[in-house]
Length: 256
Image 1 (cartoon, rainbow, N blue to C red):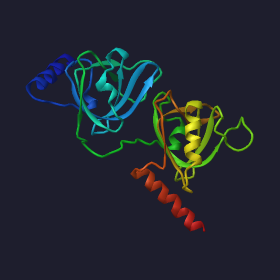
Image 2: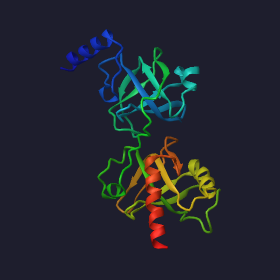
Image 3: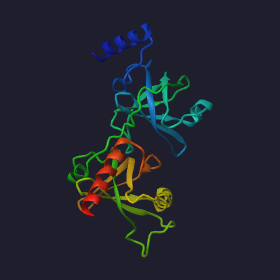
Image 4: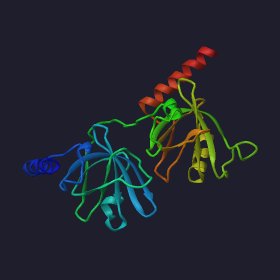
């Protein structure tokens, strides 16, 4: 059945300029064409990694090994839309799974990319509820998006006020229901976060962690970063952040 389906898809590609949804991608066909937005660009050791999303909100992880990096890949910019053709698909293995897709894209010598006009203006956040983290209903091997008001910044291992030279930083986020989540930022993230947080003039700071990793044990539930994949955004301009800030501002005014 899979063989027949692959032949049908292959014939469809040959007949017309056909672009497919990310959810359709599988290794049985080698002539895929997709249009995607670049959500994340980062390096994992010496490998260039991308997290991509199509206009339907379906994500996939892409890997560009060092031998296939060139002037085109060096110009890949987060937030831009591109078309990709002629790439390989392999099953996802290992502990690092930024998205749920069973397969990931791997560049080959014939892979081509082209900048295209945006298909939509969506940010494609997929925020999870703090309660779902606490209940253990989420897969801890998958990255998640988090949003909450920053209520505390500190480090239980250090005394005194927060400092930029700490090796790791803890911040506590609060959602609209009053639930709190502790997030651990290692040294690669802590200094940059501390400096941005310290210089933020707003009384209400909403933090977004994009592609964070869950830390869940019997006694602790929280989140942290994963390699350099995670992105931390303070008072980011998007619908979800604006809405949450409005909620907390309204509560503050009601309490005054």
